[in-house]
Length: 282
Image (cartoon, rainbow, N blue to C red):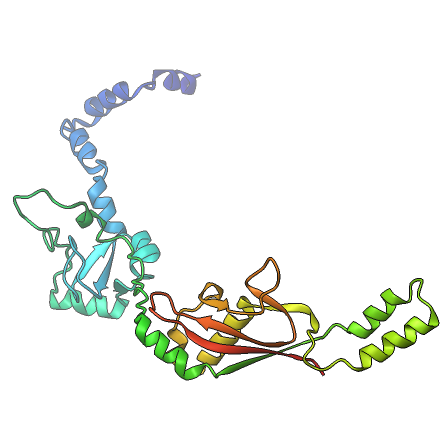
């Protein structure tokens, strides 16, 4: 019963507990509570960030941080994701850090370094100095040839005759097939005799054709063997058949023989003349 009575007399709240301590011990602890609150005060955000930062050595001048070779504290995430991959700074080993602290080397950021203090408005590019720069791509410089020089190179490297080979159309079989329809044996004999007297000068058609595009490709292959001549700009529009063109199409020939063509570089005054020879494929 006595224990239950003592338990009932115990204070139930912090205020009663402090009053009991003062009365029982006679201690003056009025100033203890503020001291306790002072010790339990949390650290500031700047202090917490300073403890998390690491010291790195700059490999180049970084505006708002410091010169090349300086030791500055930065966030580990910034060093890991940007500064170290772009080779802006290096990590400082623990032994070197210990030596630097012993020598009293300054390890602080210089926010005024590289900042222009002009009266004019600050350019927006200054804010992007820490951003990764795109690699510089040198523009391609093409030394264009003059029309006169192009014509000189064409005259030098294009031979007088440009040869092509095509499969000829067999005229004898075609004619015999047409004459045999409703013809007599005597007519066939006369037709065969007449065909045997044909000379090589007769016009012979070919399968396909030889076009100005074919001629331009052949000319460019001939020019490719010389560095300067390879820079001549020539297209199929710069080649023209003077004779032997196919009916309805002036850009191609469809028969065996030799045909004159004109070649003129863009901007030139006069064309040069060459011969295209179409021979039968053996």
